[in-house]
Length: 351
Ligand SMILES: [Ca+2]
Ligand SMILES: [Ca+2]
Ligand SMILES: [Ca+2]
Image (tube, rainbow, N blue to C red; front, side, top):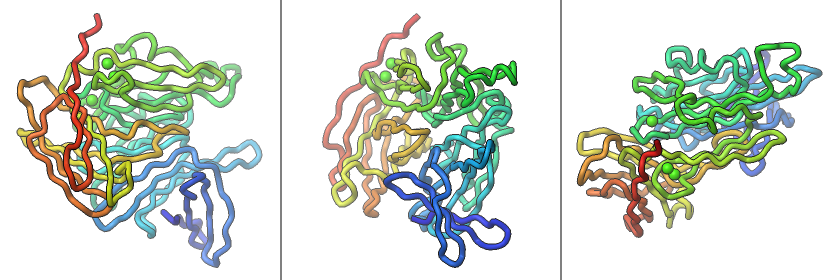
């Protein structure tokens, strides 16, 4: 699958990913192909209604002691933009613009990247203005994704960090092999603040972090975390206070579309006219897979709150569902609407 192209000066250079293995290949104009890199993270993004698929990938090539990583952003099967970066992980989600943005983890002494999707075919670099770049400059990030940990309706960012050299401290005394994760809370208007220190000792512990995934494993409505580390135990972090806000969780079941509804675009509308957009997706973060159900944070608790949903399935079919009560886990089947619903019971705030 060709998903992007970059210009290496002399001739066009096409980049694609083999979907099953995630291998990255390159080809030049005369059809010569060669394996280029390992994929360190990919994420699909929906750019506009004409585009079937947009993908961003971080990939790397090793030459001597130099490890060069590349980012390609492709739109449909044509060229839109490409940029060399030094990056280790990528993922995608919405910054509530209705278009999906990109966050990418980078090496130490390089801040994370954050690209805002303008919806016009262009991405704007907002890493500096958002505060993300400055707050992550000492970290070497692998796993990273957007998720709304406090269910206020604004997607937050998790970054899991750890250096690749276990003796890095000898040559760079300020840089450690094991590094604490970052949790960046979205303050709105694409500004973020680091809240890791306020969220308990478990999250602050330095690890040689690699993979990261989210799921509501205890079914109380808020998203919990699974982190993996190099030569260390897996860590399952329960989110104890996230479910103080209203929430709607949505599982999709395709019929004409694929069974899991992967690629389904779900727009939620509140009675106040707030629109939240998410897409059912696979393949975010480094070597990780989060759960498929979508979690929509709905903000302050309110008696009798209802929302409406519009689902555009990969088959092209559109389903609209109105008067959906908050604080439920619903299963939505293509062409049929809600086929199962379970109330979510709020947890008590942990002191
Ligand atoms: Ca949030
Ligand atoms: Ca939970
Ligand atoms: Ca919880």
